[in-house]
Image (cartoon, rainbow, N blue to C red; front, top):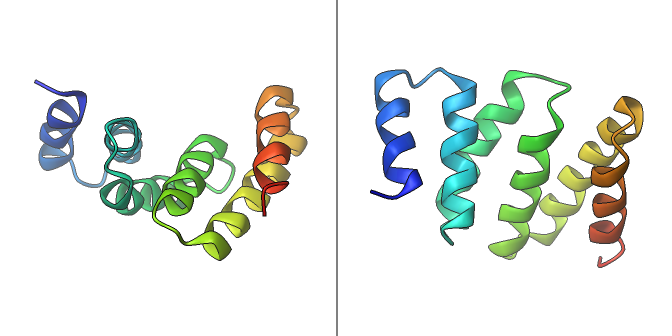
Length: 101
């Protein structure tokens, strides 16, 4: 059973749980299903204004499906959170991602 199949079950049991949505989105992106991951990562990101990780993965998902303007905006939002929260490695990654636009 794939990770996404496991998390699909969790989401089916509790669709409002942002952690389940995040985990499903992360699994889908890892498995190459970026388009499907977007909905779940958007819901996770919307659940908490200062949750950086779903924004990073959402940006990567948007970039993978070719929505460069949306990906850039999400990466910029995530970068602001990384800086504010003192997360140096994500900050470096996000600066590198933003430099590709």
